[in-house]
Image (cartoon, rainbow, N blue to C red; front, side, top):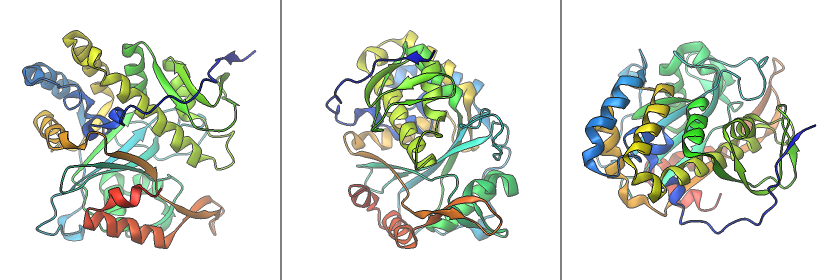
Length: 341
């Protein structure tokens, strides 16, 4: 018998996109960014972050192969990798591993334009067929196996001709730990049918309360969906919105004890580049304070699906869309592009 969850309530009004108003939260620097609402928390929260978060041994490729940022370009690009030992679709799935973490399951490029008045969070399907520098054509996820974090950064930089400033990997268990600390979250499922996961949870269209086990099952599942990983990415985006919405609730932000609990719960599941320390995270949070109500999450358009010559199931690139995204990142107009997605 499945665990039935009665979730078929009407979609609620959006709350000004407050759920994703702080980019640092999305890159898992919830730790000292979104949660540091008052500066007097900085010392204790920063210490919790520094004591628990890991640092990649290597993060970036050699400087000579990296894009050169224009002098007037003050945008910030952050690569977020989701790490999940369960692989997101079952323990038998072959996936690259994040160094010092679990198997790579999710990839997002977070863009803060030069004017700091908006934030774009762009999911990149892990099965997207791309050129991996020095290794030929592969799924984008394969860059981790072929060259770790530096080659993954180089692949993204080559794909969009955009320089990555920071990279972070987040274990999905960190987000679900936050769910426990928050006492559950309300997630909106935009899928138009009910579906049941391998763990036995049934989800219906609309708003639904989830505990940590339900949430983890929700974000990992993809077998029920005709477009597979694309719907799973949308579910992950919905879950992140829900976690941040609850995390940034004034009732939680006004409680030092709750904030400390969330930081200590989340930070052990975080791996960052060596420049993304507590002070940098807090500075990023301050820099994007004007982005409230102007944050978008979308997925890189694809050119359909099929099989590679060696028999792998892949998403082809939509070459025009990729060029448009690259131009929008360069021009700090990705918000305009995202508005039409």
